[in-house]
Image (cartoon, helix red, strand yellow):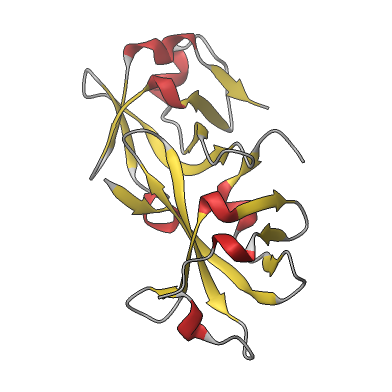
Length: 86
Length: 87
């Protein structure tokens, strides 16, 4: 994994679970600006995703805590066990 | 304060003295930890180049520890004067 990545380069990448499910496409990230930390991935859900399993934003996008992220390369791999069930 | 990256982008960036530096373009992140490493500033004013003793730069990369505050605008600490241009 690269040791640094530009935030806007990540937007549009696929978000995939570590069990191989395509969860959706990264539409934004939320940043805690005092400490300087990415807190959440904001993901536009794929068509076949059961959104009820996720925390949702006001406009129906999936909110996945950054600590669930296992890898960032061509896609973002997230640990399915780290995704909160609503 | 928690803010979306797309909302951070475009915010005006100033020094502690109130001088405009440019506009926030992007941030760089450590993909392992999610830590914000730096902010990237574009549209850097000509006057500001001179202060940094630079001829011309496309943008500036400011380490996150050089950022004093991010709210409606971004305020940089005076340590920015030790910063290096991007490219």
